[in-house]
Image 1: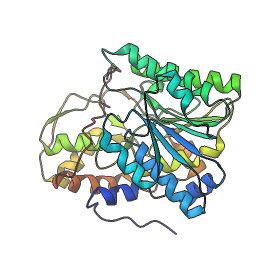
Image 2: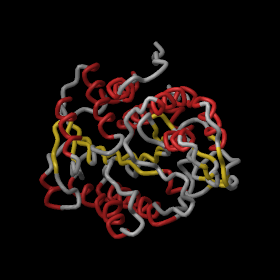
Image 3: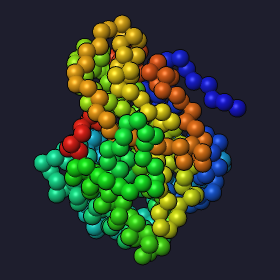
Image 4: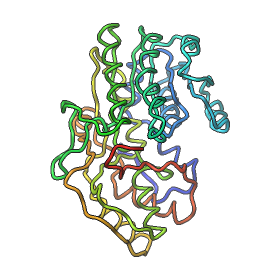
Length: 346
């Protein structure tokens, strides 16, 4: 039975219900993935609703398991809502090897830790988070199944008139952030091979919802009547609820060496047209500068769509949710994506 979606999203509770609504495929995948589950780096943008989707799918399937979330929880207010849902939380520094070794042994690991923003000027910490930490995790969880988040940035810029990078393309990262993310993948691949750890590596570009994401960044610029640089002229996005679902559907398919999965929307969007659409919805003029380059960071998600189902929320629906959210001063995470960076500096 197809899901029904509201015309507008009124509040955070309704938004998070949508973002954490499990599909039948998610319920089936979690039935095939027994045992406790730990999310490393749960306090980021996707972690809370991904964990909530796991709880809801388990409830639908009649599964009882521990769901554990690990983070520094530098913002303590992000911890209690997770506890209220029934997620066990553990606070600590993932770069501390003693802390990693103290974590509970579980058969299922979702790795969401990493560093992007602030990478420029803090390159050593970026490499430590993105390449050293995976080695610590693999040593600790050598007897587990690991699903690790990566990024489509590892592919580098590809022709805008093509269909985007596919999982079998050779990486060509631009800038230290993307290079360190490829380093993360190589560490996971090495330990998957040598320790025979089944893994899936998720290459995501770009999850969005009403509080953050590429479309929110562009909508805010239009709403505030800022001039928008269209040099990075093309992008693909996926509703975060669909990204959550596709990630969880992939859990049983972990392999050694790792399976790779692009998580991206079905369309390549032209930034200029996105902004013009928001201009129509806001009733505001749109101001541009620059011209579209011939290449962009573009991720082809067709393999995942064929395997796990096409995303349920189309981009027009996302426009219709984001515009009134911004017009009514809905809360934002204050975490711009900087997707427009062509130098790879974040």
